[in-house]
Image (cartoon, rainbow, N blue to C red; front, side, top):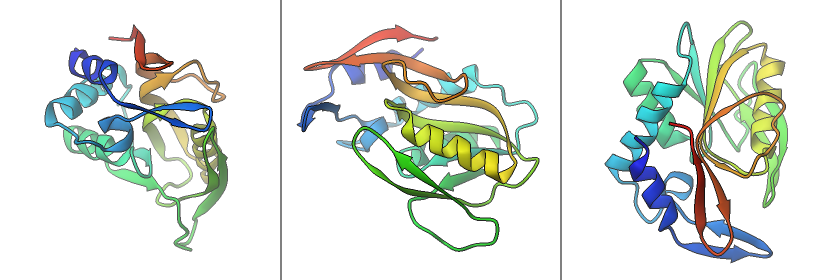
Amino acid sequence: MLDVLVKSLETCPMVKRGEYNYFIHPITDGVPMVEPALLRDVCAGMVKMLDLNNVDKIVVVEAMGLHIGAVLSTMTDIPMTVMRKRVYNLPHEVAVHQTTGYSKGELYLNGVYKGDRVIIIDDVVSTGGTMRALLKALDIAGAEVVDVCIAIQRGSPEIGRPYKSLVQIEVDDRVHVVRRYL
């Protein structure tokens, strides 16, 4: 398990954004193309790792959590909601600020309510900024976070609670998978 993910990471292209070495990968960027085998590998790994007992909702972050969350929702019959980058002004919308290593802005959570039991799914965690913002929004909404699973962990970012990842990577002029969790 995770062989497809590992191989795709170890062969993915790299670009430099300022001083930041940025890897380009189908799971984290949707380019060059998201192969079904890769999505199956990632989602099967997450189903194996996650505590899905009595979960009401899957929560993902726009944009690259969408494809993983959609497949997981289909596999588990658990509804999905998306933390968005634009305001909708719906009742109970929760707005929070996010700061990552390469961006900052507002995020908006809808469709999560007090007492909801949720799992969080995301493509990558590198600085932890987006995940900390999402956790804050879920706390404001009154949801209980049952589990958190990230496909790709870059380094060892602190998000304020335990989380699971499929693989841990280090990046220099290429991606090195330093740990597989399955």
